[in-house]
Picture (spheres, rainbow, N blue to C red):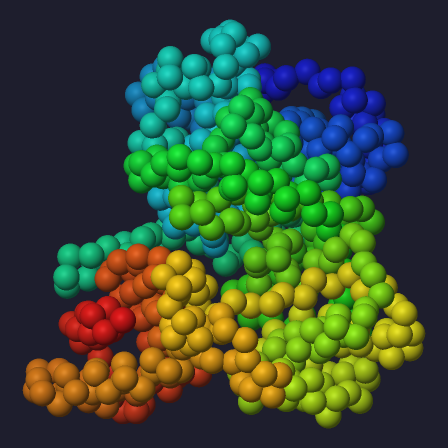
Length: 586
């Protein structure tokens, strides 16, 4: 196959030659993360140089290995590698049969490149759990278009303008074309003989609403993927400080100065505008400047005595667990940054997907600040509250601060002895384990440096904002905007709304025989929390219905919404009526 890759710059050439031996030691694609590790730990590179190589050269690095004859010969046992090669063979056939030309007449010749197969695979693996199918395909298409642009600067198209002008000229500046491209390449990886992915069918409800389709990984290949992790660089932390955002420049990833992605993500069809972005720039620039590190104390424990806790992770989360731990091993010796962006509501999210303070239990627990400090009495006070919150035995997180502190003192010996059964019962066992490791260290040395982030959660912050704007003291007191004593339990607006919501639903069932089943409904706090919280964010009725259906599907496990004998009788119309009532009440 003819090579079609850009020449390496001098830095990459020096680095590439030094790693040839490393590549030849193993034929597995797992070397991708080993490669990243070698780049970021190379003393010859400044952090900006290392980040530039990771962002701009990763696809060339991988493509060169797929085109290396020695690598091909040594990879005969790698099934994932074979499937990607088969995907490229399908792409070649589509090229010869002019199928690509029919679908993408202007750029069809440039699309016959294994780079786009690799890119689509890595982006899907990185973000399949984060986006629905349509959003994921659009994002894959956007990345394909940008890579196509970079290749075209020295290719047949030989375009000298900027990326935005290039998209405009080739009519690639709309989401329909982006979706078509992403869908085209993912279908190559989803149909025989590759079958790496499949798409869940769209289910039509009786009231003419559609559930978003999602992409899933074929479980047959999960082990191969876990053993040979290739993920998109945009899902990784940055090894240098993200570029500063301003009214005149694009920030975030280094390559964004060319790519030109705005600070606010989401569909252009939303057509939302923000007149004054300066406060948003300031907030994101500050968050982007925070230096983080891997919680090596926790990582080392999980690799040894703490393996029992990894075994507790659900089967569906095993791939995420594997990737998270591999990335943690990759970044364990260096400081890094978490690049952030905003949605159209002004809510800020980390771009890093697997190591993030906004992700799940393991991802949050494995994250530390780069710099720590000894704890004052106030610091120790809040650390204890945080520990109690994350274990949450008997809903201790809803008790007063003094009771939470006392809970830690009462269980102190279990905490410093790292009692396995005690830790396994925690609501967030990994974060709680990190807390236990810190307390154990403080027990040995009260002046120990603590780097663990301690989060102070808001109480339904949408209502908090409304109460503050309206200066509504009564409403503000219900969401803890007014001061309360240490021995006083914080207010819980979700629990306060629970009884009237249940009564309204029950009353409707009693008054309407067709919906008599609703008279037996008894929701709990976990069920209604999301709908109350997102109502303030203008969630749609359909959005509420999806939230409730997701909760209702887990009745038998933990939620005990209805008597087991009547659970199966809940039909779509009952659910529709239920969320309408909830929507009206709130």
